[in-house]
Amino acid sequence: MAQARKIVVLPGDGIGPEIIAEGQKILEAVNERHDLGLSTRTCVFGGAAYDETGKPLPGETLAACRDADAILLGAIGGPQYDEAPRELRPERGLLGLRSELGLFANLRPALLYPELADASSLKPELVAGLDLMILRELTGGIYFGQPRGIEERDGERVGFNTMVYRESEIRRIAVRAFEIARQRNSRLCSVDKANVLEVSELWREIMIDVGKSYPDVELSHMYVDNAAMQLVRAPKQFDVMVTGNLFGDVLSDAAAMLTGSIGMLPSASLDESGKGLYEPIHGSAPDIAGQGVANPLATILSVSMMLRYTLREDAAADAIDAAVSSVLAAGCRCRDIATGHAGEHVIDTQEMGDAVLAALQAGEKA
Image (tube, rainbow, N blue to C red; front, side, top):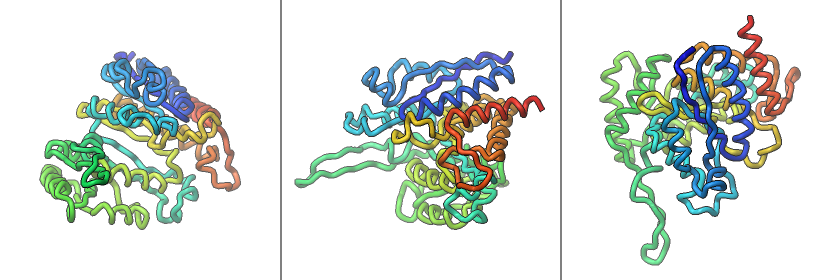
């Protein structure tokens, strides 16, 4: 048996517990079948933690996450927390967790399964075969910069935030981006706003400098407004994109819709050692929580990413990916990816998890 490794599970809020249950189902199956030696511990986080402890990131949860090899997160937040003090809202807990664990590199793949080409909002010929990776710097930039706040100036309220990046922060996300580009098709597009922002001037300068160590990787640059346009005009021109915290937040969500549904996309947030937090990129969807209609595939694919990028268990990750592909090819759909075409079977959250489990078991018996 492999050395024991600890996984912390954070179900969170809204649909979080529902999708996490299906992700855990798959994780437990591959843990047993591949003899991975994984142990899991569930902790409260986000709004659920605020309700229970008065804090979105309790000390016990943070300690468990620090001690873990990897973290699996469902989703956090909800309208009931909008009136909570800003520093105690669920989103602040997530920002705090990223910062405390040094999770600086966010990997968001946008992969379009052939069976879902018609579910995209773009023409199938524009997105068929899409396989894009967006790297978003996650612990710097305007979300963390100081000073920030709302104050009164000259008789009116003024809100202000600071976009700031240190050279070291840019350099480490650049290295990670070039390494991932080298593992794929050796094409990297760095997205900035260097024509108007000094912080982006530094970003571009550092990207060019780091690129000298990767002569085999083709580096290009694009302003963020053009990048947004190009994502919906000709998305397959990109292979790997790297950008800062704010721009990456926006562009990765835009890229998500190219694949048919935000419910299909996993993500990884990694520290310098490769330890990571894995989560679907969608939110807590309180409007459908408890109805059993949430799509768990992004969470299941987040389990696959965890196995691949942190635990280095490629065979188990490949098995999950193949099972998801098999289920989609068989016509199984949650309602967010259903198109109404003949041969589709619209199923609920638990049924989708069961279908992936059955495909996983069948694939490993073959």
